[in-house]
Length: 249
Image (cartoon, rainbow, N blue to C red; front, top):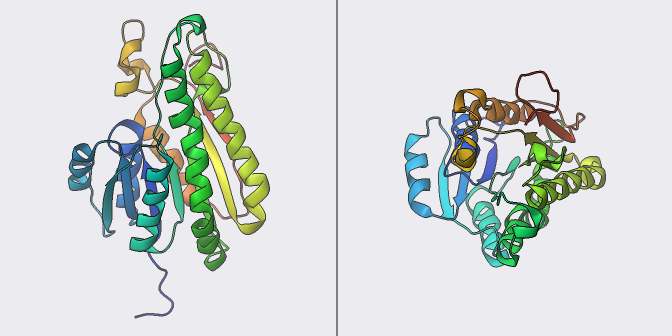
């Protein structure tokens, strides 16, 4: 083996079965990453894996981000298979759109578990591997990218609880960077407005899909982050739609 040859980078992507997470997986595969792809349902992951191109290996695993045991097992499985973690993508998320007074406890608990508690557990479990990878490659370091939401930056009626979980995720990413960037590990929250995915189908009565953000634009931001040096930290990227208001979801 060529000693000067760079080892293949490895990424773990949650929410990889559809939408933004799927597109990120496709782009990372084309860049040559080894991949662990996770989602609640295994069948769609198999379909995504079949669509991937590139030289990297692909491992799929069903995991519910609201179950801390499954989150720990996911990270352990990735470590066992690849032994490094250059990029952790937190793409899994759920949302309930209704006035604050109409959100029941079950819906609130689900959003808190999947959008906030799960990501925190995932990062905690991944930190030793992220640190080890960054230590071996301090110029590039290791990165965490969380798909947040513009509703975590700018409040929107009907998305109070959802936006609160995403605001928490943004704050969490900033704190991770403050604590870990000296070890060449940093976190970025990408906060898009409405993206044309299954998750925004409820909005199509008032907003045409062609006027929504494209999943490819969000995935391209993730790739850009993987090409940056560890010196550069990017706390939060807000992505809005074109129009006459800068904070246009």
